[in-house]
Image (cartoon, rainbow, N blue to C red; front, top):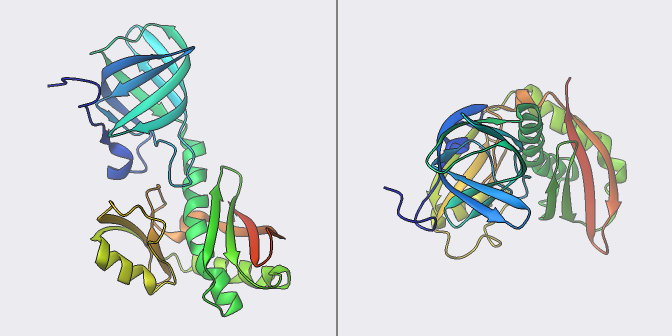
Length: 253
């Protein structure tokens, strides 16, 4: 039984099935947030902002009202669906149906998986185990920052070629949960580490592109690299001494 907003944990459907576009849920709390409202559901397919991946948007519909969801946040173990536009009324304890903006989510999933694949594509093209020191993800493009002496400009065509080779090979994307010590050793094989992961996290969610790349990640991903379509490298820039940024996107091949 729901005892308090703090005690309620939200069932995370987006981890159970990242391809889920709509779902039924019960409203566990309705929070007033100045000029906005936050809805807490017992379960959700809406991904909250985190791990570099933007939040989902969409609509939550009840029998007496409809809320346009413009942002989603994780608060402790609950997911808060933010709206500033409710037509009618959505009540606590009511049953609602959620609809995520699937086109937007799927573009984010494709770009997110491409970012993981691209980390290794850059290493393959340079022949160096370059460290990723920054990243960013959006609907239209993604970016990675590398510790790198010199410009990656002349290698951009090769990086794109290597990435597209891995996409055409349609490698599986697997999600694994490992004890931290095991995860640390596993990602080291792919030139990654867990050093930015908070020390209290002892069970680590690993996203692995089959025999290509693996790292800790809490985001949503496609099932295989073939779903990315094709990689397009958009350009590079220097982000200061020894740091190179490349921008890229998944496009329909």
